[in-house]
Image: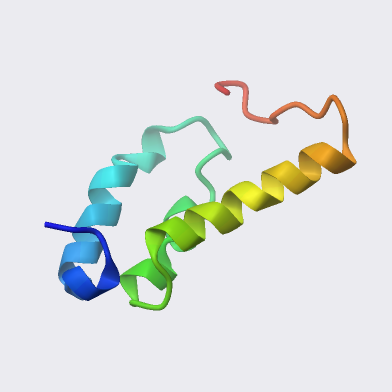
Length: 77
């Protein structure tokens, strides 16, 4: 089974996201806020996982460039 939208059904994409995220409620407080929502466009068939992940990572790269020495607010990271 692939992960591309063209290779999966909505139900399969929901399962892929659920399995990848695991039990996000057990994550450190605040770190997982909105994590499941980030992948809704993949589930809906609007964006591929790769595109969503690249957009997410680009925000951190830009933030790091703007704020040298910036540290993660998550105590687990």
